[in-house]
Amino acid sequence: QAQLVESGGGLVQPGGSLRLSCAASGSIFAIYVMGWYRQAPGKQRELVADITRGGSTNYADSVKGRFTISRDNAKNTVYLQMNSLKPEDSAVYYCNAGIWITGRGTNDYWGQGTQVIVSS
Image (cartoon, rainbow, N blue to C red):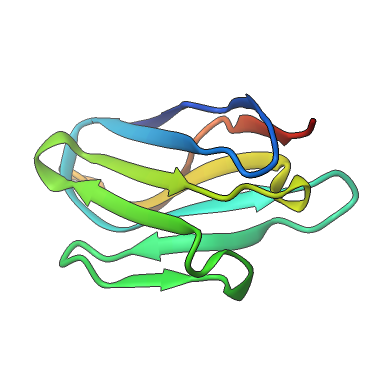
């Protein structure tokens, strides 16, 4: 099994910045795509950004130029640097990863979520 633990959420004023982190642990053989999703009240969960093991990235149009996803493969950790935050970025942010567990194959894993509130 594997676990994803997020940190870094909180309350920030419009125009401010936050950095989210997500660390994977467990009997990990390899981690493939890692990503961040978000879900605002009354809305569906949506992809914010993802990154392959080789570093190729993909962003939602709404965050391009403001958010940066990165990962440290040695630490099994993915980051999301969020700049120029807007009230509409307020949501619960979830980490996601495709993880190959030693002896058990590959499965999709989710973190517990971290709240981001952008408000003055």
